[in-house]
Every structure is written in C-alpha cells, then in structure tokens.
Image (cartoon, rainbow, N blue to C red):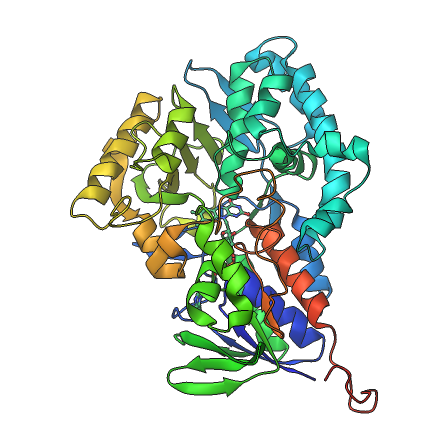
Length: 501
Ligand SMILES: Cc1cc2nc3c(=O)[nH]c(=O)nc-3n(C[C@H](O)[C@H](O)[C@H](O)COP(=O)(O)OP(=O)(O)OC[C@H]3O[C@@H](n4cnc5c(N)ncnc54)[C@H](O)[C@@H]3O)c2cc1C
C-alpha cells in the first residue's frame, strides 16, 4: 500500500482518489477551495440553483465505468438531451441537432437545404474511423512523446489524422455550406482553441457528441462531483477542504510529499489535479521538472469563459442547449487569441436553460446559464477582467447580443450574477481562468499535452490541463490512466524486495 496525496478535488482529482483507494492505497486529498468539484461548480441564490461549469455530459459510459470499477453504480439520473443543441445562425436559420445520429441528415436537409445531410454524413463517417484510431489508443493510454505519436498506425492513418490540416481546413474541404463550417469550427472551443489553428483530429468531438449522444444529470451536472466525493468517502479517502498545497516536496528528482498550512505531509505518490502550469510553475521546484516547466510556459493558454447566471421570471420552455452565432465567428478568435486580446464585441452566445424543477424556486421561473468565449484574465499584457465596471458592461453587451438574435430576456431578469475569467481563476485556481489549460494550437498540441507521468518520480498529473485534455470524459480518462500508472497496492506478503510498495 502506498501513501497517496491528491492535490485538488476537481473531477480528475476526485476520480483518481476513488480509483486509487479502490486499488488499495491510503489516499488523502487536499483542496484549496472550501468545496469540492473545481470547475464542476454550483451557485445558489433565491431558490435558484445553477451549474457554473459543465452543462453537457458526453460519453456517459466513461462515468458509469468509474463507479462500476470503484464499488458499483451511483445514484445519478442520466437523461438524454434532445435536441442535443439548437443552433441559430446569423442569417436567422435555426438548426435543431437531434440526439439520434440517424435523424441528423434529414434534419440538416430540412433546416439548411438538400445535400447538407450528405456532407455531414461524409464528415461523420470519416470521424468514426478517426475515433477508432485515436479513441482508446490515445485517450485511454499514457501518451507522452513523439514515439507514441509514431505508433498511431500506417501511412493511410496519417492521411486520416492529417496533422497538417486544421479543423477549419477540414470544414472547407468537406462542408460546402458555410453554416455547417461555422458549426464544426465551434468544436475547437471544446478544447479551448481557435479552429484555424486546431488540428483537424478534433473533428472527433462532434462525432462523439453525435454518436454517443449528449446527456444531462437530473439536478444538474454538479451531482457528478457530489457522487464521486461520496464514493471517495465510502472508500476511506481522507478529504481536506480549504487546504491549499503550497509545495510538492522532492528529493533528488523523486516526489516525497506536500506542504500544506505550514505542515509537511509525506507521501510515496503525489497526484496533482491543479493546472499543469501551476504544478510546474509554482508547486514543484525540482530540476527534473525543467522540461515540462519550459513547455507550459511557452504554450498558449486556452480560452476562458465569461458567464452570466440569470434568475428569470416566467418560464418559456425550449431546447435546453442553444447556440446563437454572430455574423463573423472568426472575429471572435481574433479578439481572444490575437495580438491585442479583448472581450469579444459580437460573441457566439451559448445558453443552457435546463427544464429541471429541482433548479427553480417556483414553476413560473427559470435559471439560465449563459456562456461566451473570452480571453483569459491577464492584467498587464491582456484583459484585466477586474477593471471596475468591465464585467457589468460586458454582461449588458452579451444580453443585447442575445436580444439581437431573437432572445430578449432583459425584461425578465430577477437577478444576474456575473462571473468573469478572473472569478474562475479565483474559484478554481485555473491560471487566468483558462478552462482547458493550454490551447490545442499546432499539429502536435492536441495530442501532446503535459504527460500524466511527470519526469519527477512518483508525481502524476490528472485533469483537463494534462493528457488527454479537458471536458468531463477526458478528465475521467486521465484519472484512469494515472491509476493504471500507479498500479494496485501490493500486499506485504506479495511484495518483492525493491518492488512497488
Ligand atoms: C464554464 C465552463 C463550461 C464547461 N462546459 C463543459 C461541458 O459542457 N462539458 C464538459 O464535459 N466539460 C465542460 N467544461 C470543462 C470541465 O468542467 C473541466 O474540463 C473539468 O471539470 C476539469 O476538471 P479537472 O479535474 O481538470 O479539475 P478542475 O475542475 O480544474 O479542478 C482543479 C482543482 O484543484 C484545486 N487546486 C488547484 N491548486 C491547488 C492547490 N495548490 N492546493 C489544493 N488544491 C488546488 C482547485 O481549487 C480545483 O478545485 C466546462 C468548464 C467551464 C469552466
């Protein structure tokens, strides 16, 4: 049995703690915030409950596997979202994407015109082959170098992965309708990136959403974090909230424990769920970590999010997930990743309007989560989201943009909570409020994120800023990979001299 310390109670930290405890290790978890869940957060006011992070669960079997492999199913009600999303383009066209992929071609033909369904099917079939290639082999395995990239397959596979092609480039090649290209480009933001720089391998994201569906958890996705925390406690994980780890201690390139509240906690294994930039930039000072430290310093941070939580009078049921595109969605990425970052003047607006009685005070009310992509909080070099008045003024702009696109709720707002990238940084420790760690810009970036096994012996990275990336299912994969790398506890009788403890 090893003494394992987990730094951070985001979903990755919680899932790794549960898996390692189930594997027989003694696990203690330290979280700087006073609550668990990290970006999988929640906010309540005046009888309304909001999720502050994820609103759509994909690959639900990955979550089910976590529970099945750590003691049995959890008491979560996972429901299909149909339509998985309702899109409205700048020309006013509305497209409701069905949950069932078999219905998508007809829905596209009906909404956008004949032939659109066939072009989507070509993309979908191509992405299915790509998923076979990178799904399990890359996303469920430790992947930490160009050598691993090389084992991806033969020359035909290289043409499919096409690392030289961007997601936007793939759209131009396969999707004649500009509205479908806009739809495809949006998936780059699911890894916090610009579609004009993101490799086309990211086309597996819409494939996964369509082939495995989009899902909601009754009561809100935050319930997932609650359920994994419960599982950790059942398995005997020691959970310390409000406990900021200030250092991961090492001796000659090996992790020896952590420092928290001025105390030293020894450990055989340290699993860091904090953002990789913080782990290498602040928590570990050992020279063994110099290489990844340089890499995370050089990398571009992923985009952040500007969030409005709206308590609305009255209820107007409609699709739970809505995306309202602007006239020029590429201008959005120029504002975020260009030389002079600024709040996007005419952003794509995403609305989550769950029809869930558990989340509203009375039936004649509803809570909306509104999200737009935003540059990170970077006072000095970029946007200072704490500048007086900026958050409120930008909230007005976002509500006006929604109104221009047919959803004017300004007369129904009972209250609004503004959460800028600076708030996300304060709440979750994500540098600048970057949602996905580093952006997947460049041919190798999507597949070569900070590795789960760090060069410091006994130190492992779990969570959205490490391999295989952000989003709930990938974060759960990272926990599975880390648990596999650490391995099960070995009983004293079975232990061989010099073997694992
Ligand atoms: C607005 C928003 C919308 C999103 N929408 C979706 C969606 O619809 N679907 C989806 O799948 N994903 C979505 N995501 C992404 C998803 O939420 C994240 O990828 C995932 O929750 C990240 O989990 P994580 O394990 O990386 O940990 P995080 O949630 O980043 O948590 C890390 C934890 O470590 C703690 N920590 C940091 N430093 C220390 C320290 N020194 N000591 C102790 N603790 C520390 C932090 O406080 C935090 O609790 C969204 C995220 C956001 C913010």
